[in-house]
Length: 275
Image (cartoon, rainbow, N blue to C red):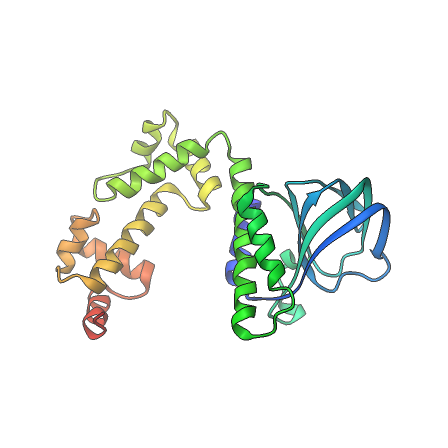
């Protein structure tokens, strides 16, 4: 089963979106019923900056405070109850670029995330605010790019929070794979390095990265092989060996499965399109 952050990342990878309003708002203590009777018409990424409040979506309360973020879907009844003297939050409105009937359920969900309140976050917010009223295509592209950076930061923060105990181990394993990809690596050998049973180690790795350790290794090898086939003058057999496969035929079948083209076809493409 995919983790929440990985499921959200997959959604935004697949689903093109349009960015609409960008707002930074301060509310005084009290109750705000702006969308209680008129449901939201846009999806929103909301980040609490100062103070405390409850965002009540369809009668379910979500506590908001600095370091807390929410992805709120459209067609939600929403009211805000501010508990402190002031509550400040940042909001980006967006919508998928598809007809409503084709939208995935995630478009309508409410997802809570943690986000690091650091200088990088505040800089992203400030840059997005500068693009809030832009209309040129390059400016609109810049606004969308910054939104994805902000979203990526929130999802990464949530991934680190949910995997704090295993984060260092998984990152060390990833570094080991990248340095030793040409060697014989098995799930059992990776698990043994970390003093774990293979099944549990694979579960932790998948929970953190969204992909199993051996699939990660294969994907890393295939990406390297693609670059070599496009740019180097080595034979397919030599490239297969350089990324950890002594059997060139097996490598070719695996490569085609992952890239949709044979190594020979990619190599020919590289010859036809020299850099």
